[in-house]
Image 1 (spheres, rainbow, N blue to C red):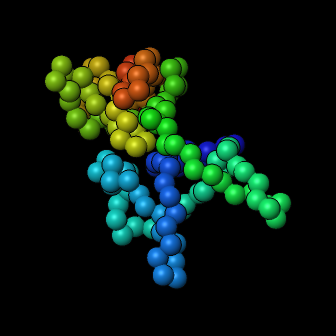
Image 2: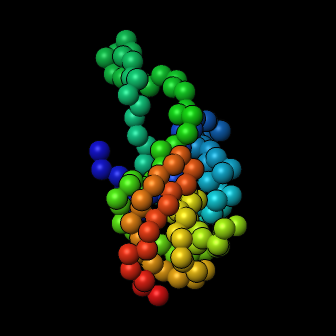
Length: 136
């Protein structure tokens, strides 16, 4: 399955019924990280779960599935990206945020710089990137 580079966030949720409509709840974290803004319109993709079960009519329905404990990092070692440095960390390194508010630490970068980096290390909650080109 191909996933668009425009993906802002990915989460599991229930669909609830409210009178004559169905509602999908967005986790508070997605709003707090700034990936999703209340009142805006977004394109929604629904992905079936792998644990489908058959019904009596021969169609398939999904069964309950536990939410993964942590989403996977949105970057891989060796990947190159253009990022904007939004902040400086406690040790003086540049901080960039990408999908879902995921942090990339960029040593030697200053706030406001837009740089091309190569990801050199990936952890569950942050990555480290090396500047390979200043783009201003």
